[in-house]
Image 1 (tube, protein in one colour):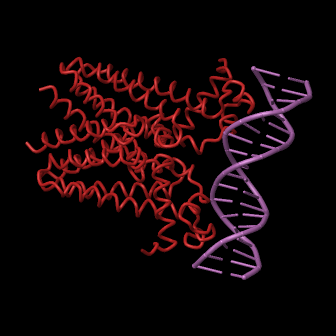
Image 2 (cartoon, rainbow over the protein chains, first blue to last red):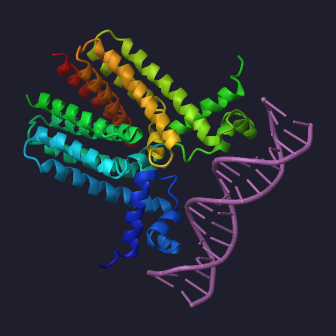
Image 3 (cartoon, rainbow over the protein chains, first blue to last red):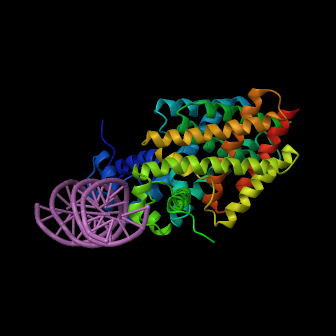
Length: 191
Length: 191
DNA sequence: GTCTATAGATTGATAGAC
DNA sequence: GTCTATCAATCTATAGAC
């Protein structure tokens, strides 16, 4: 039962707080406190300060979440059922965390889009990564590359939008509606 | 050529800044400066401080944006063309404002979802209003009430997600893809 | 590498003159 | 109603002892 090293604890705590409360309202002092790390260690491991910490967090948490969603999609053989299952699971996770844990980077992405270009770019790269992975996945059932890409884009966008509405309403319904719509759209594209 | 009154100038400036930079990183001092209002006037007109200002801004700007989108949908007779036209217009507006003016409440909604319940509720009410208006609009072509509601939900969600990706990438493509997907989904529901 | 102390700027909010 | 001055708290970041 060993604790993760200091750097990892800082990153994980930062990921959680950025995800739930965003970039601007997450203080480094709180990150230090909740990760049980001395304040100075943040600047020891992340000399670039808050921005560097956020940049690495976006990259790491973004990649991890992409893999998680893809694994979820792979866990059911039928693609249409798989889509609905993935959205339903996201709904369960959201409700189970008191509507806190949705997309790991969306809040930060909107916050920094117009004011912090390095962070904006970091979020854009993660979204591109997700779109690419989604395109490959849809490509198994949709031969036309352009359609597969369009479906991947749309699935990510409707998921992001559903997260916003579900967190605001503190209700899982938007995610379930989104999953249903997305599977209908995929079905239409597979004809 | 008279200037709007002080209270209105404060509200409008707040709406712009909250929309572009979010709630946490928008300071009251900046709102006062950019609205050419004395700092004390903010507390004169909004005794509840930043939170009251944000609450009224969410309600006002949210309602206004809903009307704007609905008017956009009404401006083209064919529903499917209308949807694509609305998303294309949103893409143009976004690009024309250097990818700043997307949804007026989404950034704030995500920021406050887990930390400020009055503001969370204000955003939830705006989304509900939009869903209701969208349901009525789709209801003209989709007789089944449940389907109309589902389409309205999905249109709002995919628009919100497209705004996130478009701002991050500084590219209009996500909005165009979203519009195309949404019109396909509506077409499938109208059969 | 760990940890404390603190600088320097900025925040939301208040008081009070006019 | 307008405007200035200021408080107390908080923020990111840095310096330096151990």
